Image (cartoon, rainbow, N blue to C red; front, side):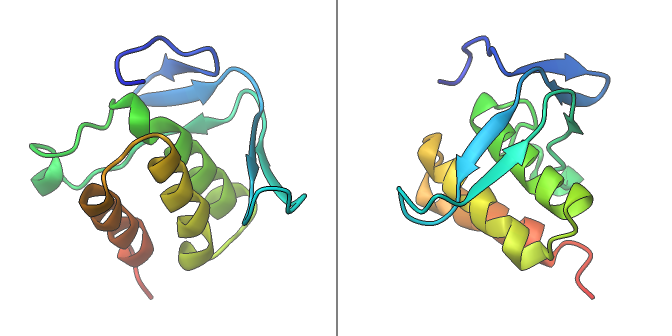
Length: 114
């Protein structure tokens, strides 16, 4: 819930730090495939300067998705499209609207496109 204190992250400098492991099931429920983000993993919510009036990097609804995305991208070496899938699903599960989610998924998918 937005504005609620969390038991899995803390503020850490300009970003956040996981305080416990996050487990996210990939694909359909019961798939048995999980993405695990370990405790003590630093992550952030990067938002282009021009989108800051609309998106807050400290909105709790974005944080789990950001942790999953950053871990998959930077620690596991997933590509941007692959890392965007759990990002999108976590945003949906945490109540982010379809339009806002689409904008955010497009942003993480095309950022630094090569």
